[in-house]
Length: 234
Image (cartoon, rainbow, N blue to C red):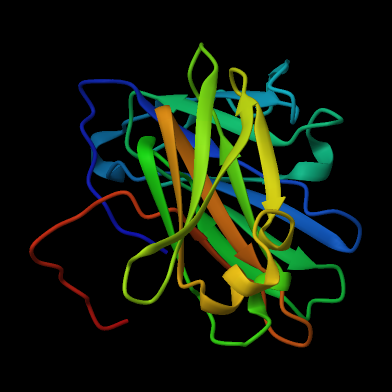
């Protein structure tokens, strides 16, 4: 879970990609209006569903307005058939996340919605197993109105580039999920530490690791650099 502040003078846009993990998984979406109850602030919310090719499936009418400090929970099974990603728009402060869980309840993960597209996305290692990259996927989504060209780069533990490949271009709102094993060869995967996606347009990304017998792990791509970080104790 990530904490952040937002500017309410401009529309806030959030993206939730890769909502369908396949058979045996269920996904739930939570959208919360963080305004204080005392201010009686309702916010208008527009949810647009897209399939994996980026074709708009329409606006989700079950959520149009949220009262202050209220949460709306949506099961993706109630969304339009073929929904692969969501764009959430509002002038208010929202917290949005997707909860992935197996139907048997043995695995689950909470992934926050992504607000800041970037031309460079970094995906660090999330767990330490020799064969982890067999079970790691990266999902990329192009939120622009124009096509995005993307290179995928393998970095070793020292930060040196050890391989680079061009990925298929993404059309507007198109999303694709790439297993790392299909991008890099065994020798590269053996030395791989971080995966970097570089695009000529701002894109968003999400990585998931579904290792057998271990809980699902997921994280949006890292896009922000800083000379200082604060880690609160949770």
